[in-house]
Image (tube, rainbow, N blue to C red):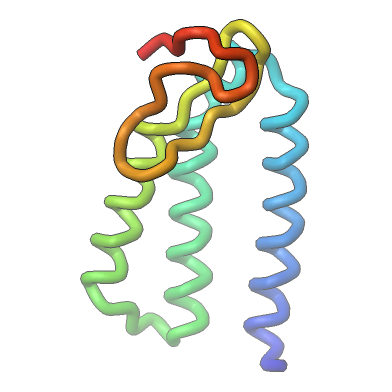
Length: 107
């Protein structure tokens, strides 16, 4: 395995574990306020690693796709004020109710 890819995988796993713990433990208000910054930060880190791995030659459509995915993640991921769950979207629409407790979600 190339050294660059191993560094990428280790960093991505560590970041994934940290964010997983954050979304499991953080309060509703903290999740709601930090989520956009986390998603944008992950997008920038991913783009940086991709640029590095591809020797600064990433195609423009990859960057556009990353921006669209980041926007949809910020727009569609919601948090339940009732049970503090993180509600991930199934497709391109926002969920209306919490899948864990059934409370109507705030837009």
